[in-house]
Length: 252
Image (cartoon, rainbow, N blue to C red):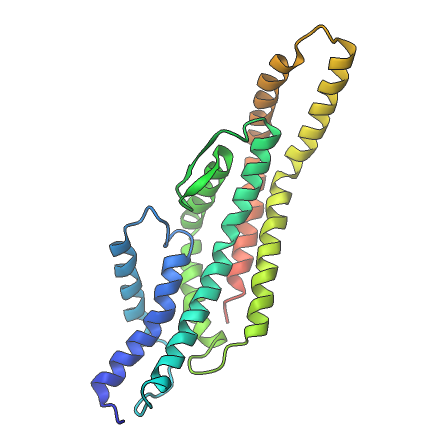
């Protein structure tokens, strides 16, 4: 079945939108639940309009319907899912770090809805998630995100078979690295919790008549907040460097 110029251009637009639309719906900052769906859809359409002239796509002047048209579309959706979920896993680092910090300070049960992910989370996890998302825009990392979307068409050319084995390994490694990053960010609080609660245990043995619990809880919260204030800049610097490196993997 022969396609004329207008259907060919429309198919190219749909092919680009399949990848860009999925990416916009999943990427941190662009695909948050707090952003209305119409706004995200409008941004995805705008990004698609900008990408179509810049991206080299195979000629679809003659396409065998329906499988010849659907298979490239499915491949583009899968590639968009892979890139979007890989980058979105970075938010897991703030969840891991925040939950660990809250548990060490005795505030693990103080939870609220995380605006960046739309789920229940520890207060410190929510705080770190919002702060990390703010740093994305303050440090112009969203420009790097847009560049990564464009260069993804060089790394994963449309019409070719995506490297599924490498993509699966990269997804697993990204999840492991995100968890490792969360532990690294919260490592000082793990040491603080170990030393603090060992000291409280020794103190309770030395003075059993004193209600140590009523002293330990306010003290752990106060010392934890002081430690967080001292280390917050370093923690977010480590997070920013990791996120920049992750986005750099999708640059040609």
